[in-house]
Image 1 (tube, rainbow, N blue to C red):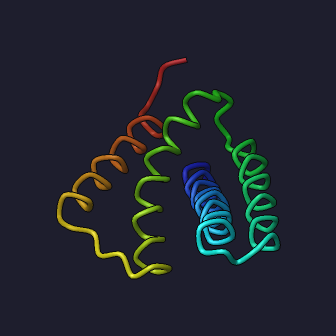
Image 2 (image 1 turned 30 degrees about the vertical axis):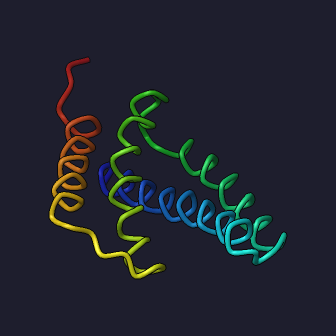
Length: 111
């Protein structure tokens, strides 16, 4: 049950961080205004809170593993929100990152 919870938390964190950054981007780069920027800042703050809910207590491990989720999630977000079409190297790189997430977070450890 712990890996399932951890994966769900990673997905929620990615939604909040990538979505928050996208909202700030839209507010500034696309001139949508301060409401978009404010919503993005709130989402980014919530991302920081969600990261603390991971069952592993090691900050460095959580953030390192989350980096792989962020990479894959960013490509997915771009596909859905902006019509981005990843090429095979984008997909291959994201898969390598997700394998790294699995090794970092879920490999058996002694102690």
